[in-house]
Image (cartoon, rainbow, N blue to C red):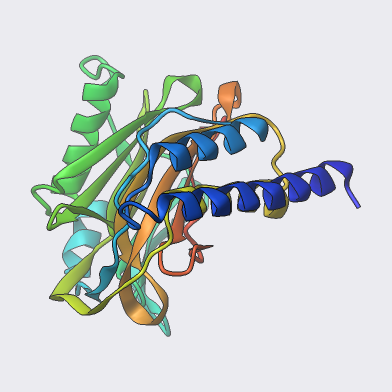
Length: 305
């Protein structure tokens, strides 16, 4: 067995014991509020595993209800018309959704893939460029990238706004802009537009949007504490992904996202970066079960962009 893997498993098990003792100590106060001792122990455990935190750690982990989410029925044909412009494209109904595509093997291929399951839309283009910019007037900085992402949102999707956004600077001075919807103060991770911007324009885009139907539903269930979620993330990255180099957690928030059975669940949302190598990943952990949600490990940047 890989020596690094054995070492990391042992450290993670010891870390779990430390956090469990911290939890027992904190039970004398508010049982659903992360204490300074728990936070300090979590930071220490992560540091011993070459994992560093450059963000606020949530404190309140009181029980939370689920959220009733349903996929939004998009006006796909209008979106396709906006995306393809004057190109003559075709559409194909599939068991999981609908695809639109333009094929010209001598020039480029453009496509839209829509999923009925989660209402997501993936925009692709074989030449790697979805929205070209006027290079004489485009300034590639955070504000310029956000403006270009807003243009894609409005011109292609016909959406005026998604109120919360984050900006990540990636390898080569490129940007990843991610927009989210907000519901009663919580980011809806299931509702996002993510675009990658270079000095040429937008090179990739992913869009997903769910509708909040009946709001919060069911009884409030206990969720795992933030320090337990951090340990779960560490275990996943080190022992499942096999990444042993130094990493940094630059974002951690309690959000809602689509969980098993089509029900919105509270979740811990992380952004993890890997130093000068230039990649960043989003991870989402189900706060009810403290497990990584399927298909939630999303690369938001990589050196090849």
